[in-house]
Image 1 (cartoon, rainbow, N blue to C red):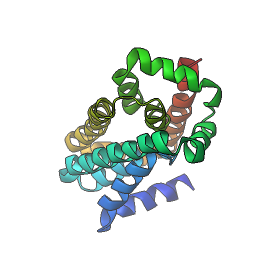
Image 2: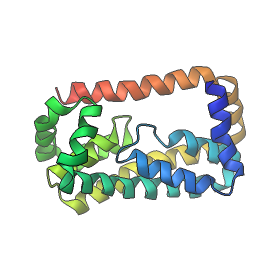
Image 3: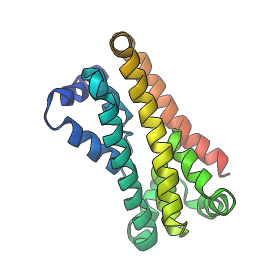
Image 4: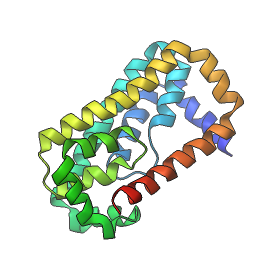
Length: 194
Protein backbone atom coordinates (compact mmCIF):
# COMPACT_ATOMS: atom_id res chain seq x y z
CA UNK A 1 0.00 0.00 0.00
CA UNK A 2 2.82 2.43 0.87
CA UNK A 3 4.62 1.57 -2.37
CA UNK A 4 1.44 2.31 -4.33
CA UNK A 5 1.08 5.67 -2.56
CA UNK A 6 4.74 6.42 -3.31
CA UNK A 7 4.21 5.65 -7.00
CA UNK A 8 1.09 7.84 -7.04
CA UNK A 9 3.09 10.71 -5.55
CA UNK A 10 5.82 10.13 -8.14
CA UNK A 11 3.21 10.27 -10.90
CA UNK A 12 2.70 13.99 -10.13
CA UNK A 13 6.20 14.59 -11.46
CA UNK A 14 4.95 13.57 -14.91
CA UNK A 15 1.84 15.70 -14.65
CA UNK A 16 1.57 19.34 -15.61
CA UNK A 17 -0.04 19.81 -12.17
CA UNK A 18 2.87 18.47 -10.09
CA UNK A 19 4.14 21.92 -9.13
CA UNK A 20 0.65 23.12 -8.29
CA UNK A 21 0.01 20.02 -6.17
CA UNK A 22 3.27 20.64 -4.30
CA UNK A 23 2.41 24.30 -3.69
CA UNK A 24 -1.09 23.41 -2.42
CA UNK A 25 0.19 20.62 -0.19
CA UNK A 26 2.83 22.92 1.33
CA UNK A 27 0.20 25.63 1.82
CA UNK A 28 -2.31 23.31 3.50
CA UNK A 29 0.28 21.58 5.69
CA UNK A 30 1.38 24.86 7.24
CA UNK A 31 -2.04 25.72 8.59
CA UNK A 32 -4.19 22.61 8.99
CA UNK A 33 -3.26 19.51 6.93
CA UNK A 34 -1.27 16.77 8.74
CA UNK A 35 0.89 15.42 5.85
CA UNK A 36 4.20 17.25 5.27
CA UNK A 37 5.07 18.34 1.70
CA UNK A 38 8.55 16.80 1.85
CA UNK A 39 7.38 13.53 0.29
CA UNK A 40 6.00 15.21 -2.82
CA UNK A 41 8.99 17.58 -2.99
CA UNK A 42 11.34 14.60 -2.97
CA UNK A 43 9.29 12.74 -5.58
CA UNK A 44 9.13 15.71 -7.95
CA UNK A 45 12.78 16.62 -7.50
CA UNK A 46 13.84 13.01 -8.05
CA UNK A 47 11.83 12.81 -11.24
CA UNK A 48 13.28 16.06 -12.59
CA UNK A 49 16.51 16.83 -10.64
CA UNK A 50 17.26 19.87 -12.82
CA UNK A 51 14.10 21.51 -11.38
CA UNK A 52 14.77 20.55 -7.75
CA UNK A 53 15.42 24.16 -6.70
CA UNK A 54 12.29 25.37 -8.48
CA UNK A 55 10.25 22.78 -6.58
CA UNK A 56 11.94 23.83 -3.32
CA UNK A 57 10.97 27.45 -4.06
CA UNK A 58 7.35 26.46 -4.75
CA UNK A 59 7.30 24.45 -1.55
CA UNK A 60 8.83 27.32 0.46
CA UNK A 61 6.45 29.98 -0.86
CA UNK A 62 3.42 27.71 -0.43
CA UNK A 63 4.49 26.85 3.09
CA UNK A 64 5.05 30.46 4.17
CA UNK A 65 1.74 31.58 2.65
CA UNK A 66 0.03 28.65 4.39
CA UNK A 67 1.76 29.73 7.60
CA UNK A 68 0.30 33.19 7.09
CA UNK A 69 -3.14 31.56 6.83
CA UNK A 70 -2.41 29.73 10.09
CA UNK A 71 -1.48 33.07 11.63
CA UNK A 72 -4.77 34.60 10.41
CA UNK A 73 -6.67 31.61 11.84
CA UNK A 74 -4.98 32.32 15.18
CA UNK A 75 -5.81 36.02 15.11
CA UNK A 76 -9.37 35.96 13.81
CA UNK A 77 -10.70 32.39 13.95
CA UNK A 78 -9.20 30.90 17.08
CA UNK A 79 -12.56 30.09 18.67
CA UNK A 80 -14.08 28.81 15.42
CA UNK A 81 -11.20 26.80 13.89
CA UNK A 82 -7.91 27.33 15.71
CA UNK A 83 -8.84 25.62 18.97
CA UNK A 84 -9.98 22.52 17.06
CA UNK A 85 -6.67 22.28 15.23
CA UNK A 86 -4.72 22.77 18.48
CA UNK A 87 -6.88 20.09 20.13
CA UNK A 88 -6.24 17.71 17.21
CA UNK A 89 -2.52 17.87 17.97
CA UNK A 90 -3.13 17.40 21.71
CA UNK A 91 -1.87 20.84 22.72
CA UNK A 92 -4.93 22.34 24.39
CA UNK A 93 -3.48 22.00 27.89
CA UNK A 94 -0.11 23.40 26.69
CA UNK A 95 -1.55 26.48 25.03
CA UNK A 96 -0.38 28.99 27.63
CA UNK A 97 3.07 27.44 27.81
CA UNK A 98 3.45 27.97 24.05
CA UNK A 99 2.71 31.64 24.75
CA UNK A 100 5.62 31.67 27.22
CA UNK A 101 7.88 30.15 24.55
CA UNK A 102 6.93 32.98 22.22
CA UNK A 103 7.56 35.60 24.88
CA UNK A 104 11.05 34.25 25.51
CA UNK A 105 12.13 33.00 22.08
CA UNK A 106 9.83 34.79 19.60
CA UNK A 107 11.28 34.14 16.11
CA UNK A 108 13.39 31.20 17.31
CA UNK A 109 10.28 29.25 18.32
CA UNK A 110 8.87 29.70 14.81
CA UNK A 111 12.20 28.94 13.13
CA UNK A 112 12.74 25.71 15.06
CA UNK A 113 9.20 24.54 14.33
CA UNK A 114 9.66 25.48 10.65
CA UNK A 115 12.85 23.49 10.20
CA UNK A 116 12.26 20.41 12.34
CA UNK A 117 9.58 17.70 12.35
CA UNK A 118 7.74 19.63 15.10
CA UNK A 119 4.26 20.36 13.70
CA UNK A 120 4.73 23.79 12.14
CA UNK A 121 0.97 24.43 11.92
CA UNK A 122 0.64 24.43 15.72
CA UNK A 123 3.13 27.30 15.84
CA UNK A 124 1.60 29.26 12.96
CA UNK A 125 -1.82 29.29 14.59
CA UNK A 126 -0.54 30.09 18.07
CA UNK A 127 1.71 32.84 16.67
CA UNK A 128 -1.44 34.56 15.45
CA UNK A 129 -3.37 33.87 18.63
CA UNK A 130 -0.59 35.42 20.72
CA UNK A 131 -0.16 38.33 18.29
CA UNK A 132 3.52 37.68 17.55
CA UNK A 133 4.87 40.38 15.24
CA UNK A 134 3.63 39.30 11.81
CA UNK A 135 6.79 40.31 9.94
CA UNK A 136 9.06 38.57 12.44
CA UNK A 137 6.86 35.50 12.04
CA UNK A 138 7.03 35.66 8.21
CA UNK A 139 10.81 36.22 8.24
CA UNK A 140 11.49 33.32 10.60
CA UNK A 141 9.12 31.11 8.62
CA UNK A 142 10.69 32.01 5.29
CA UNK A 143 14.23 31.34 6.50
CA UNK A 144 13.49 28.06 8.27
CA UNK A 145 11.11 26.57 5.70
CA UNK A 146 13.34 27.59 2.78
CA UNK A 147 16.41 26.15 4.48
CA UNK A 148 14.62 22.85 5.08
CA UNK A 149 13.30 22.50 1.52
CA UNK A 150 16.41 23.79 -0.26
CA UNK A 151 18.62 21.32 1.63
CA UNK A 152 16.42 18.53 0.30
CA UNK A 153 16.59 20.03 -3.21
CA UNK A 154 20.38 20.35 -3.07
CA UNK A 155 20.85 16.73 -1.99
CA UNK A 156 18.60 15.51 -4.78
CA UNK A 157 20.20 17.80 -7.33
CA UNK A 158 23.67 16.61 -6.36
CA UNK A 159 22.95 12.91 -5.77
CA UNK A 160 19.66 12.45 -7.66
CA UNK A 161 19.87 9.03 -9.32
CA UNK A 162 21.72 7.22 -6.51
CA UNK A 163 19.29 8.67 -3.98
CA UNK A 164 16.33 7.60 -6.15
CA UNK A 165 17.70 4.05 -6.31
CA UNK A 166 18.27 4.11 -2.56
CA UNK A 167 14.72 5.34 -1.92
CA UNK A 168 13.25 2.74 -4.30
CA UNK A 169 15.25 -0.06 -2.65
CA UNK A 170 14.59 0.97 0.95
CA UNK A 171 11.21 2.64 0.57
CA UNK A 172 9.44 0.65 3.30
CA UNK A 173 12.21 1.32 5.80
CA UNK A 174 12.35 5.01 4.87
CA UNK A 175 8.59 5.39 5.22
CA UNK A 176 8.80 3.86 8.70
CA UNK A 177 11.59 6.32 9.57
CA UNK A 178 9.47 9.21 8.20
CA UNK A 179 6.53 8.16 10.35
CA UNK A 180 8.83 7.83 13.37
CA UNK A 181 10.20 11.32 12.71
CA UNK A 182 6.68 12.72 12.31
CA UNK A 183 5.46 11.08 15.52
CA UNK A 184 8.73 12.06 17.18
CA UNK A 185 8.04 15.66 16.19
CA UNK A 186 4.71 15.55 17.99
CA UNK A 187 6.30 13.91 21.04
CA UNK A 188 9.16 16.45 21.01
CA UNK A 189 6.63 19.26 20.86
CA UNK A 190 4.80 17.88 23.88
CA UNK A 191 8.07 17.38 25.80
CA UNK A 192 9.34 20.86 24.93
CA UNK A 193 6.15 22.52 26.05
CA UNK A 194 5.64 20.32 29.12
